[in-house]
Image (cartoon, rainbow, N blue to C red; front, side):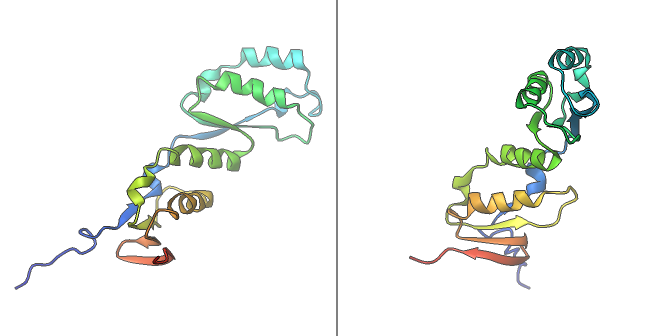
Length: 169
């Protein structure tokens, strides 16, 4: 009887599992709305005093979206001032909503990816995950890997959907 060989395990295919790269820590929103007078006006002196009274430890080891849910014109410095308090406490923050925070997290977690390891190799971007990966992350991985990879596929190494194949020169 001949030996069973796992061709997937011995192939040059590199699998990118975004679920393994993507941080799972809690995402929270810091909303400026409660600090507005009649949900319209931000008074600098009152805002600064209120920020000093906040227990910032509640944001420790969390990803924070700094936003304002009221339909008010809030000066840019107000968001930036909140960021100065979060900078040394939160895992990271983005000025914007939770979607913009996810974009920032994606950029952050993919910036240390060793792109040279994908050079002239077939790459599979793993499809199924238990953790919700934003669509932006899948687009970002294509933009990072396409110029190097021999081919890019989506799914599992044993069952993939081809997405890109480098032209032979």
